[in-house]
Length: 184
Image (cartoon, rainbow, N blue to C red; front, side, top):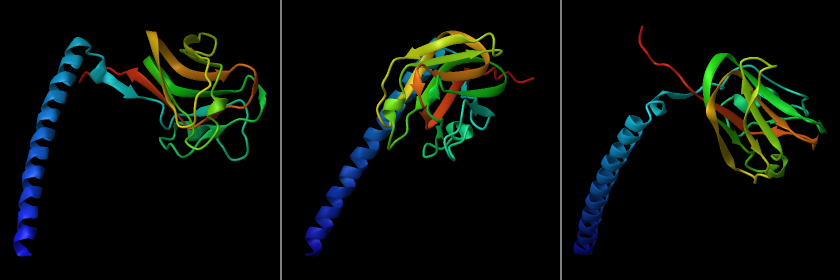
């Protein structure tokens, strides 16, 4: 019985060593790919999420589901409006950023079909908003949607507005911006 156990243990070590070597090889390849991507697109390394914890508002509030739940960094909380014409959610980033991408996380357990007919806009003031994207939807429960703003939008405000009469429920919204990291 001891020999069988020892033999099985040795096989386990060899397998573990092979697996560890493969992981190290894959990690090295991934680092090379990321280095090339960063050389070809220097903005990638300066991309940063800038909406978390910032002041957000929405057109109405359904029970306890506050607008700040959609940019608190927690996927299990969410914002939710009441049923109304053209419901919206908006975040004030506090200053103008170079907005490259806006991400929307759909609730995990419900309501993916509420994410449809969305105008996703950003701008330096409420009267100078530019469309980043339009999402016809509908989304599915648990989706992670990413919208590239091309060209980059200089914006302090990001707004997600639904066309039609319904409600809007967002698990999380991330705003990815190019942040200058120069040391002064």
